[in-house]
Image (tube, rainbow, N blue to C red):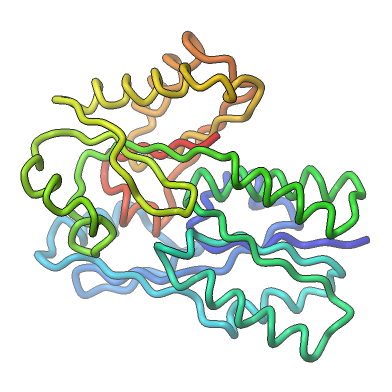
Length: 278
């Protein structure tokens, strides 16, 4: 039975993954410094980083319209799996759900499920890869949905950012305003709650120390062994490989992926940010 995996553009697939015809990407849009950046193959990370540095205003983002998702669903596949940003961070999930309702009205024979990744970036990639693994094995649609929902519930997302300014300005740190205001020079080690909200897990005096705490937390998690770790970096490949080296020393992941931040991840991770999921 044919299947497609529709993802929003915060799912930072590698070039090799993007070449797989089972993946269909629906772009979000970024507005920064008076310029518009569509988060698709035309996206330039260098141009966006420059625009954000030059602008005193926070960059903003726009999720795909329901029609954009509907167009992606009309791909001729029998089973359609959709992976979106955390519903608490973006309207992308809501748009995908609206499109699902529209599709089911006209094409009730097509199976569609929209997964709230409760994550972003690296987390979305791991969810998409899990779907591909299960669907490719011939597993029935409902069984894939059940297995992937369980996978999402167990997945961990962690990150360390050089700058929290974009998150703060865009209201993504509502519950951390006091902490951020008083500790802008402190590097926060952060993560996602099971519901997909951003939470503070620790702090350090330097990015290196914060990343070290992140790796130590993964090593202390008995459930990490045998899983795949995805490391997404925003314009800091050397830092991503440093984290990979530390992880290989302290942890027992079965595989480690290095990913490059697309437009939406670049907005929120900002220059130098690292986002991991497992």
